[in-house]
Length: 267
Image 1 (cartoon, rainbow, N blue to C red):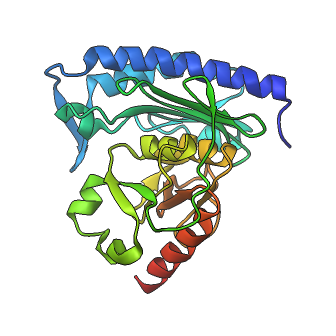
Image 2: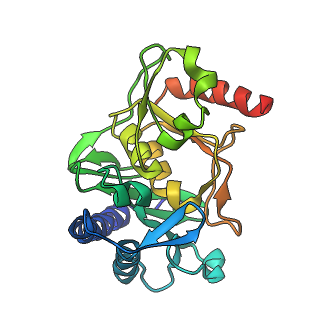
């Protein structure tokens, strides 16, 4: 059951406040000489990630809410909660460390497994995308929506630089779309939701905190979001890894889903 619009609007106001505060904090850290730790090979973390996580956790959850964040030890009590905040306090840490301005703060709100509201903020690009089911999406306070591109020819697809370097986009070279290298999966999803790109996808596993907010945004903006095999994603699961994600505006979504489902089947 959807929340009343007044309640959902309040959720968005709280998300916006948290995003702006975390974005300002991270912008202050950006371009500093930060100490970098490795949580696992290829997975860096900095004091900026942890400071933003602490700020968001103090700001967002209310009594009875669950919490799932990349930078917080998982509390499995979230599995019994109706409402769960699914957060990446700094999506694109590698870009952040290298001084590339394509990182973002990602805040998603999940109710009974569905991504119902969210926001993604890239303070350096001044892109703040907010949205919720029943309320649509805004970019910088102005109404936005996914594009109505209906053909792969000329479509703008934002893609992971590392995936491009590894050759994972080579099978799609003849499809006719423009591939635009872009950091932060959450930011890529936000660009699709705001109509600044036509589609994005990855066939690499992603954590819920990477994509929950962006999923809410794309759906609220009128687009479609699927897993590589074609089913819709659900969130706040015991295992937080998703096998990849496909997001696009309609009607392009159907074409992309067919293309990617075929690729996943052949893999």
